[in-house]
Length: 319
Ligand SMILES: Cc1cc2nc3c(=O)[nH]c(=O)nc-3n(C[C@H](O)[C@H](O)[C@H](O)COP(=O)(O)OP(=O)(O)OC[C@H]3O[C@@H](n4cnc5c(N)ncnc54)[C@H](O)[C@@H]3O)c2cc1C
Image (cartoon, rainbow, N blue to C red; front, side):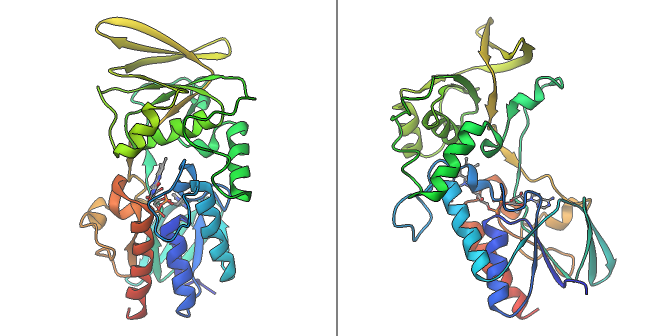
């Protein structure tokens, strides 16, 4: 039997929509390319303090685990598949082409968030696997820290910025970017025991003051401004990162690099960009909706994604 409602993406927006639709009597199918293992961008977050209702701040991983618990409470699962194309069959039905399967739907809710902006450089096959854009994919050591934080109180593993796990050797890792995500990543890396060298293209850190203060006062994060990356090559077991400042070539070495230089909406499922351009929850195609960061772009927050998830469910009651 075809599933009438398919939600693409099990981040905060998609999960909220699925739970609310279930409560309203629908039976949506929720699909995520990462299954439950790494879904939701906020999983990368060092500490979430702006989401209402939390007794104390929690790591992004913990918050995402709570979203997934909420899903199971309503007996909803996440189907693991990556949707690559949406085809309109008739005027009111769609086929979603996944890497594993195809899905039929009368209602499609796109909640697939954003993708990281990549370094504007040609990277060779031996360099690329060491350049990371998502923190949860990086380093078993860090994944261990995330996993522990999920089972515990949710914040103690990361501790307070400035405190570093003394029992770990201080391996240097190069981080790149001057926005909130790069700063957030640097705090997580420092807490996981790395000495972070954060390379910023501009001459200041952007984003909220609270985050900036935490980064600046953290002894495990060294800041380097006006560093534009020109080249990354492999040297033995390490990466050699070349930057130029005032015509002076500089060379940095690190086994891995973590890059956060912005995010963008690029997954359009082979549909025309104009369909989504007005940034309204209901697109100009019947039964096709967009919510969360996919709709809002890189300015999204968890609270906004949740709001969109609730809104789309209430729109569908009268659809
Ligand atoms: C480092 C960092 C820290 C952050 N900290 C905070 C914070 O403290 N507070 C806050 O409010 N916000 C924070 N954010 C922002 C927050 O993470 C996002 O606004 C929120 O996750 C958006 O939710 P979403 O459901 O729209 O999208 P996402 O969370 O991005 O979820 C999209 C889901 O879709 C899946 N997907 C993508 N493409 C496909 C496809 N083709 N097929 C199937 N599945 C697909 C992805 O795997 C993903 O699970 C932070 C972001 C980052 C990067």
